[in-house]
Amino acid sequence: MILSGSPESVHFDDGPRVSHLVFELGVPVLGICYGMQIACKLLGCQIDRAEAREYGRSELTIAAEGGLLRHLPETMQVWMSHGDRVESVPDGFAITGKSANSPLAAM
Image (cartoon, rainbow, N blue to C red; front, side, top):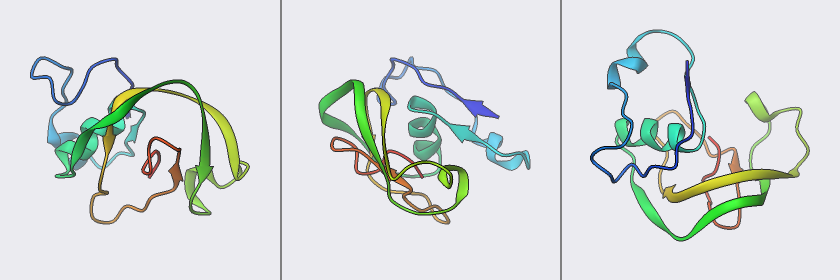
């Protein structure tokens, strides 16, 4: 299941939502941008407003080998579009990517 990006903030009451039950379906879940932020919020993580919005090209640094990012270069240009940032990872997750504005850009 893919939880996609959105221009919304997880702090807005009227933003897109998904039930926490999605994590009990027994299927892989990929959260991209807002999708990762809303998943982390549902899993009890802290989500704060970023000091600066990140929009456009950004450099992603791979912070851990293996997993989904295993065949990617150590650094690469990516597209970021968000004003919030994830401050902690859920139990069982590890930080796998970061940018200058988002120390937790992938997990």
